[in-house]
Amino acid sequence: MINVLLQSITTEMFVGLAFCFGLVVGSFLNVVILRLPQQLYAQWKEQSEEFLSRPQNAQDTPVETILWPPSKCSECGHAIKPWQNIPLLSYLLLRGRCANCSSSISMQYPLVELLTGTMIAVTAYHYSGQIEVLYAVFFTLVLIALAGIDAREKLLPDQITLPLLWIGLIANLNEFFVPLSDAVVGAIAGYLALWSVYWLFKLITGKEGMGYGDFKLLAALGAWLGWQMLPLVILLSSIVGAFVGIFMIVLGGKDRNVQIPFGPFLAAAGWIALMWGDKIISGYSSAFSFY
Ligand SMILES: [Zn+2]
View 1 (cartoon, rainbow, N blue to C red):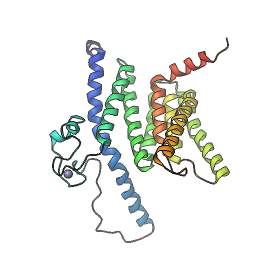
View 2 (cartoon, rainbow, N blue to C red):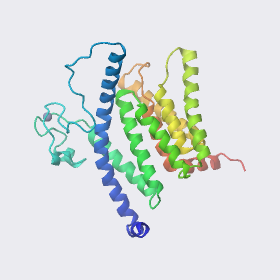
View 3 (cartoon, rainbow, N blue to C red):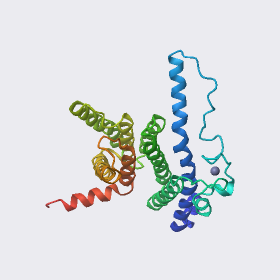
C-alpha cells in the first residue's frame, strides 16, 4: 500500500516537499543551536556548585529550554507572532528587522533555514524511494545542528555526538549504508585517528589542536559511512578548514592562534561523503590508476 502511494508521488513532488520540510525543521534547528548550549552550561554550573557544596544562587533567571519560552525578539522581547515565524518568508517580508523595535534579525536564521531546506532536498533526491532516506535525513539534520553549535560555541555536545554514533550503528545493523563490520571499525578508527593527531600535536607543540568532541564526531561519521570513507572525510575537512583558516587570517586580520572549530568542516565532509563519497573515491582511483 505504502509502496503504491510512494510510487504515485513523483520524485519532483517528493523533493519539493522535502525542501519545505527542511525549511520548517531548519527554523527549529535555529532554536536548538541557540538554546541547547545555554541549557547545558546552566546544567554544568548547577552540577559544579553541587559538587563543590556551594550554596546555589536562587535568584538565577530561569534557563531557556528548547521548547520554552516561545520565540521572542532578542533585543526588545517582543513575542514573535505565528506569521512572523514562517521560515525564510517572514525574514524577507520583515526585511530582516523586528516588527516591533526594527533591530536587525541575525542572518543565521534565514541561512540555516535555506541550508537545511536545500540539504534535505538533495538528500531526498539522492535516496528517493528508499527506506534509507529517513536515516539520511536524520543524519543531515543532526550534522547541521552540530555544525551550528560548534561554530558559535566551539562545543560538540556528547548529548548529540554519542546518539549519532549509536543510531549510525543501528542503521547499519540492516546494512543501510555499509556492512555492520565496516561501521564498527569505522567508529573505532574515527575516534583513534583524531585522538592520535591530538596527542602528536600536543607532544610536539604543547598546544591542544582540537577537542574531544571532534574525535566523537569522526567516530560517529565512521559508524555511518564505514572506515573506508574516513580518509576522504579527513582530507576534505582539512583542505576546506585550511582554506577558511587562511582566508580568516588574511582577510579578518585574525591572529594565527585563533581557534577555528573543526566540527563544521567534519560535518560538511561527512555529509558530502554520504551523498557522493563512492563517486569521489571511484573517480579518484580511476584518475590515478595506471592499469
Ligand atoms: Zn524587537
